[in-house]
Length: 179
Image 1: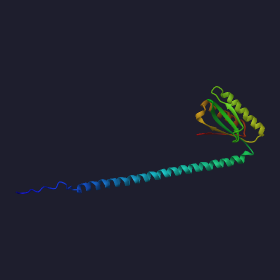
Image 2: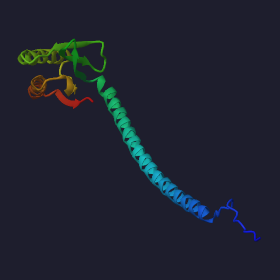
Image 3: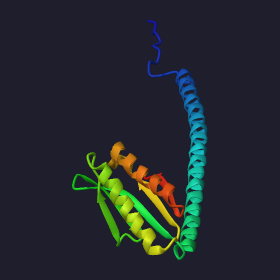
Image 4: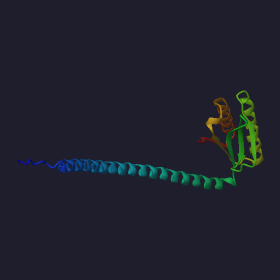
């Protein structure tokens, strides 16, 4: 009798499996390298943006320090009025400070129906300050928070300060927005 040889079924050819694994490994390594390069370029862009923002803030700080030095220089021979608009209890107010000292403040209630009254109160307050200080320059700085003032109120306040600047040669008015 003849014996048939049986093939050993337990042998597995690993060559195709290794080819597939090396191909997958190659693809993963290449995409990883590309994503690392992309991350490095985006990281360098973010660093550059943050650096420019930092430089802008540094310049702003230096400008503020210069303004403070100029303020201290003029504080003794002039009057500086700082004006801010605020909302208190749902009502709009104009706070007027001498210098930057927020202790001594005059407050004027604003309102859409009282714009003429607002102008009169601002004029009388500045007239008193000019009379008290005998011709010294009066610098009025209005820091306006546009989110807490109506356009009609804003126009009344700015109009009153413009009229005072026209009326008196020693009154100087500047407005700026708060963020």
